[in-house]
Image (cartoon, rainbow, N blue to C red; front, side, top):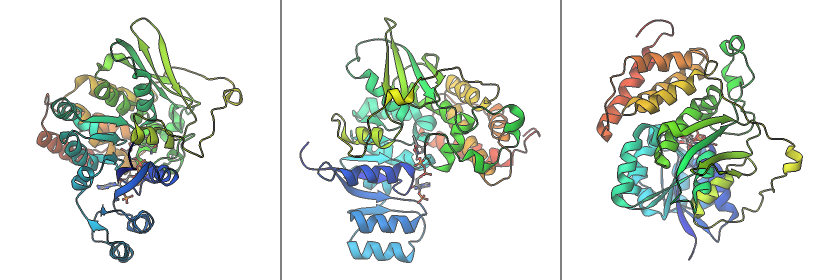
Length: 383
Ligand SMILES: NC(=O)c1ccc[n+]([C@@H]2O[C@H](COP(=O)([O-])OP(=O)(O)OC[C@H]3O[C@@H](n4cnc5c(N)ncnc54)[C@H](OP(=O)(O)O)[C@@H]3O)[C@@H](O)[C@H]2O)c1
């Protein structure tokens, strides 16, 4: 690689974004921040601008006084996220929700590589993303630890048939709870993930297994396999990040310490691997034994709903993701219970008239409509 790779860190104030900045901080000769994009946490974005002195930045709403001061003193200028993505060597899409869609599509249509953490982009608009990849020759470098693992298992195996993809799941904060206990869990409990330190939405999705459901849909688009070939395996230790079974029955797994900085640096550095200085070696003897099991779709209906939406295809995954985002917000606000999350999603999907191979306008319209419906659902009362 000649000179540091210039990164647009979109979602820099979030969990993935701050860990990506940590990776960049550790490897200044390989990576440089070209631009930063946050949402409403202007205080943190101001600090990041002061430290990394990006060429340009983006944020939501009117700039706070400290953000204005940071921008003025560093000469950084405001630019839309699509422009930030296009001006970089590689954008990291680490915004939450639908906000990642347009910069991803802009970069792929320019034939660029994209480091993608954002789940909703592929869940909502996988067909549109795949079309952009086919027509313009860009590349997706997955950041999620499971998809990074599958990606790594497939290197050098391009001509070999995939029999199955095995996505591992830690099981989230409530993996040992029975149905009665699940009915009364609080948002505070849901936000306490056993292994990973993530943003609030994805942490609740991990507890409901919706996160794993979305990952099966992402895997289908990223690795061009039908949903039937993607299976979820419970694996508490979060050491085996996922596996691929090939046509001859051979299974490859990728393992590592559960630290998101590893897949982040790989997605940014690919095809190189870089020594991320503070990363400890995996101590298998200390881990002892590794356990595997089947997920319980009765206790965790979100996983079933996501797999069904993925199989039905078209706009079903988009409607599901939108309904989930609203339902999780309502749960975090204390308005509905944890078990109401799948009830809200199911109520929205029951009334959804799917549209096959939707374009981006249809996807955005379905997203808005599903959100409206999800806000109106009173769990237990038909919509
Ligand atoms: N965290 C993980 O370990 C992990 C692993 C795999 C995949 N992912 C996926 O990566 C994405 C980010 O996850 P996260 O855990 O980092 O989330 P997070 O901590 O909630 O951070 C989200 C980031 O997006 C920004 N943002 C939110 N809404 C926005 C909008 N409308 N426009 C522009 N920026 C907006 C936030 O800005 P402000 O905070 O400034 O408002 C923040 O920078 C999600 O799609 C998640 O599913 C995360």
